[in-house]
Image 1 (tube, helix red, strand yellow):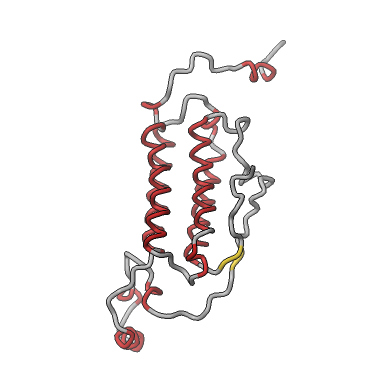
Image 2 (spheres, rainbow, N blue to C red):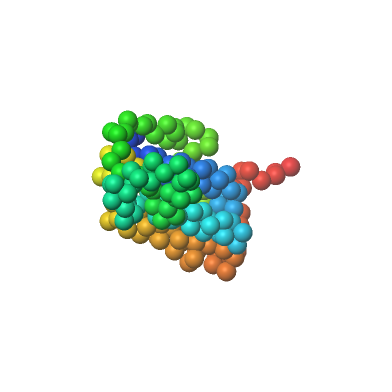
Length: 207
């Protein structure tokens, strides 16, 4: 089974498309890490990076969650005509200003990555290429996050998602964060007396 099965590949929501791009960038950095070939776990440095990227995704989630300002339509139109107003004046650190006004109907956009597993930068995680069970669970969890975002009802909106959907996505992020806290880093590495398993022996030097 492909971990991206069930993803919707065509929809207009720009916020979700931007979110997906961040997820794929993060995933590409994870799948090349040799630490996940270890049975025991991964380093503090890699764990800190994973947590930092999850926080970055959380920040994006907050921004694409519907959260309009308390401006009336007339006030917004007055702002638009104010020649002394800057983009910084309109910036809202908590949400997109598009929440405040009805936008034109958005054209659909395609999810353009090759998710079949044939792209060497977006491989499917298997026991063979990712022997670390918790690392594999984390990466496949990232894939589940990707799929769930494409399946939201708000994918048909111009660029935001509802607050209820945001809670659902945040719950998924929290599950990934928990893996980092409970299974990531040096302190959570189990003891591995036999680092070279029978399946590795054919790759060893035999003279």
